[in-house]
Amino acid sequence: MIRDEILALVLQALAAAQAAGDLPQFAAPEVTVEHPQRPEHGDFSANLPLRIQGLAKMKAMEVAEALRKHVPPHPAVSDVRVAPPGFLNLYLSPGWVAAQAAEVAALGERFAGSDLGRGQRVQIEYVSANPTGPIHVGNGRGAAIGSTLANVMTSAGFEVEQEYYVNDAGTQVAIFGRTLYARYQQLFGREISIPENGYPGSYVIDVATGLKEAYGEQFLKPEGEEPDPAFGRLGIEIMVDGIRADLALMGVVYDEWYSERSLQAEGGPYNLVLDLLRDHGHIVEREGAVWFASSELGESKDNVLIRSDGMPTYYATDIAYHYDKFITRKFDRVIDIWGADHQGHVSRVKAAVQAVGGDPEHLDVLLYQLVSLRRGTEAVPLSKRAGEIVTLREIVEEVGADATRFFFLLPSANQTMDFDLELAKKQSDENPVFYVQYAHARIAGVITKAREEGFSSEGADPALLTHEAEHTLIRKLLLLPEVLETVVRDLAPHHLPHYAQELASAFHVFYTQCRVIDREHEPLTRSRLLLLDAARVVLERTLGLMGVSAPDQM
RNA sequence: GCCCCCGUAGCUCAGGGGAUAGAGCACCGGCCUCCGGAGCCGGUGGCGCAGGUUCGAAUCCUGCCGGGGGUACCA
Image (cartoon, rainbow, N blue to C red; front, side, top):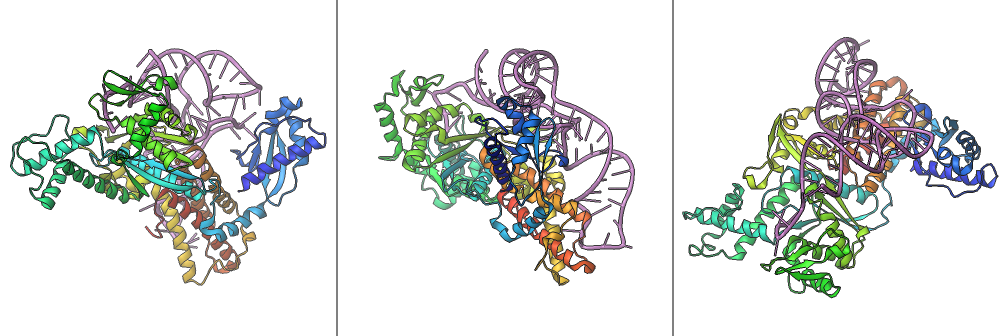
């Protein structure tokens, strides 16, 4: 990408200036270039002179001047200037900028692809909500973030596997099973109330009804007896199917649905990991429970692995799960995307990864702050135990998958988010996603109209693109590779919808100022159609990575 | 108490060591004889407080104030 080429020029200038004796020898700090806020400061700016003025024992302006003299010529660069208090500003050549319209259009969907990941195998695990209830709004945020990150990392040359960890074992699942069985019995007329701490939501009745229709009274036992464990598992399967369908509605599709229960199978990772921890002296037994001596690994305290009732904790199975990720499946890198309520779990899991022989440096936990719901000024509780919850499906059906995803992606992950249902539903036309999609529809409309009138971008000369709005648009197109790199580096997909808005804005301005189809200027018409091709490529790409559709008409 | 995240325009949010802090919505005023006005142009308005580090701080550090989350033999 062009930014890296500019950076290379600055580095070369530094080396050349030192070789020529215009700057003293010293080890330079990490050099970066950035985009100045003001266009008169150029397309790229290096603050290197300011950073090394001390090392060089020279004034920053003098350092900048020494560098400027040694910047090697480059076809994309038309000017290099020194600006106070000591910036080195580089200006892109207008001819080069214009030519990029043809480059981008020719690259098509290959544009902005990269080999940043060099085929690294990355697993991204996200949502992984308990299958004891339907997916809710908060889970939707994780879904949008995870799936977008997976798309971007794939395009950046990572080999990405998307996974949903199905918590189909443990206490909550057992409680769900008992609740389900109570509902099932109720359907046969028994006066049974759902257990204390059970799941009061009406969806459990739906699942029970489904099981009754499929299996009749097959699972009905004499009153007072415990249900067949297979009954609860069937219920969980139905819940998982529902979750899968809800996420698919938002365009989220996984490579793998990984069962927690399978960890505990004979010879599975769970027993293996316990033995491993025991062999390494990480296990202590006290108060009737089995503990992971994590305080010896720098944690603030020990944590229970096996409760005194013999049941493994979530933490224990999670250690086995991460063992499976790192050791068994050998992922080069693992990204877990969790809600901020799991924050305390991060260092524990990292400590555990270390203890079982993985490298905690290769585990990234991306926490997203919680989503709160309101209707106008009225707060809506999200709790799963409250019975009535707002499901993700409900949101998607009301505002559409595109707006839902865009909306969830907009704030950075470490910003809490207020999802106003009333606003999302009532003002869906004013959602920024429409502004971006409208840009795409406009482009498609013009291209179609041009074709009908016999115009195409065939043989276009990009050099005719000299209007300021055209150049602003092209510069914006060239930004996508940088945006994608930032998304990958910082695990911050929120840059994408913001970029999409800037891109759409640059297009709308161009559209307003530059008429495309003009019979009296056919060569310019072709050039502008070429630019539209390029803009369409980038807009489609950006929307596609977010999982948002790029409609030809609206 | 301790740990994590956040206080930026009336609202929702970007910017997270650079030069005069941005966008959307809202509000005020303009722009279609012409490719889609779901658009464009202009205007009003802002870094919680106090110290510190730095050539330079919205950005880093410390303290305080305010909001959210965590601190289970729940997941």
